[in-house]
Image (cartoon, rainbow over all chains, first blue to last red; front, side, top):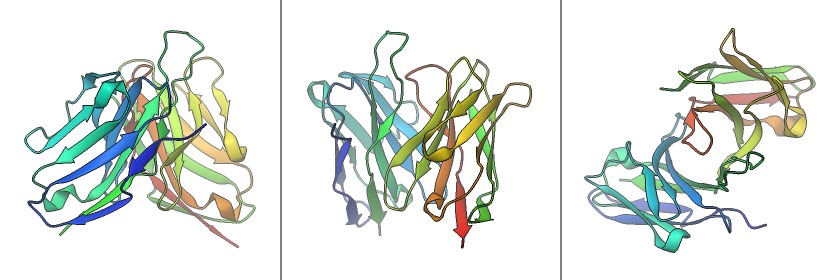
Length: 118
Length: 113
């Protein structure tokens, strides 16, 4: 089974530029998450999708960050314009959500995109 | 609201020694608890999780953790460290299934020969 795919793996931009990250979850996984991991900290959720809909975006800086999930599969996360403090690793995760009580709720993570803002 | 505290940003052990990584949580509801491992330049990999049932949870690579409600703890242990265990370990909590994970700040495990 293929894992969560992310691209690019690394990106260097200057402040005030725009950047986009792409995530392809595990096939069949309805729930997709974007986390931001700043150096020396644990990951923090930015946004959670269930199929096409947003479940939680309470910690997404909406003045500069946006995200969409196309047809309930792939997702893109955009930053416009970028600030120095956006330098971080952006992790995408997915989980298979069913109402079956035996269903696993494990979140599977991709390798991340390391963003450096100069 | 949920939160996690990991005591010790770095833990050093010798190969073959006991590994103990500490995690305390705060949750207003019965928690779901997780331990993830992160190797350099890689994503997070699930080691083990506690949802309900048996409080001693066994995971991959010989790791286990015990949920202690009275102590609000979920410490990770391994009887004998291997060099390959050197990585960053994150404890996480969620309030319900399929909700966001709230992570601790991580503990870097260093294993010396």
